[in-house]
Image (tube, rainbow, N blue to C red; front, side, top):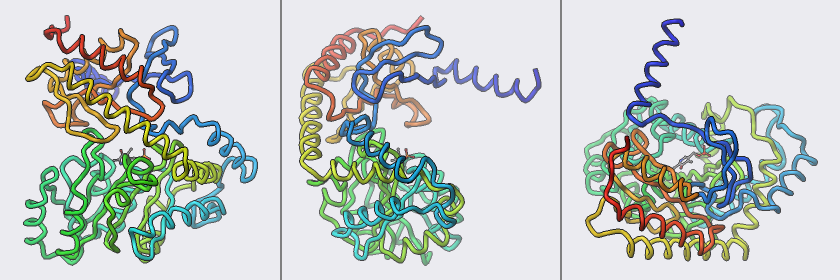
Length: 410
Ligand SMILES: *Cc1c(COP(=O)(O)O)cnc(C)c1O
């Protein structure tokens, strides 16, 4: 074997030895709490009850959205045929952008929006375009990888600030003389579930003449009375806000958008390379997303948000009942659909996940580098499509498992 292949194999073997090697499951059925999954190397699929999707409202396999996707394909074809600046920008994309701009208009003066293929690309676009050489990016420690990569792509200097530490950030901003400052934070932290102190961050942005870039991947569709996300939830409004929302999570399809003052959006169209140099997503996707927005802001959205809240309350009450105080697992402080159970040790997290598998329950173990060393966890993600009995099953199984002393896996 060539030395190059040899090196890669050695690295993979090292990951394996540290129980850090990732393996994919193959989903044989549409996204739902009960799914047929095939493990790598397994001969046949197994039916499991999963608590890991980002499909918080249970819309990913909704027949109305599947039908809208088919209708969009019939009307617009399968592909866009080009980038947004060269013939790929369809009427469906334009309609979706207008609709999302309207959603954010109460929160961002002169709001416009820009549609992206993925949230990852939206974050790369915002940070690389606005974070020029004269800028400084103030990046929250627990930010999503796409924000970290966006900051790397930017020419700006990057300063990290401690998790939710508004005072530290205030001091860092005060000491900075750069003409352009960007405060960058997840709105809901993806591996912890807690909500950033967004009102305080915005106050700092006003005081220090900075932008506030908020990634609302886990809030859009879920937070706020009509599901418009963290800005609606907190009742905030400012022309300094640059909001990134993703559309593959609660919205159940794929893609993302940036909402900001129209001047910012104009600028991104001119300068954001991850926007300019890529093929526009299929217009049918935008067409399906318009149907998704209808569901999110309508009665069905209200009902699903209420169901999700009920499951969150049930899980928290149940786990607080069955987890031994001072035990090996700690439920994180979270009011959102993301409910991590922090166990600390990588192997312990893997073992718990495997033991749940034996009960037919699928909860992902999240390990470094996705989370800080020593904070490996089970990331329980709830959806409006989980039933009361689903959550009861998980609480019951975890109650049995965490009550047992931990044995080192053979
Ligand atoms: C999932 C996620 C993204 C990336 O969005 P995609 O549309 O999946 O590329 C960005 N930020 C956060 C916080 C996320 O959780």
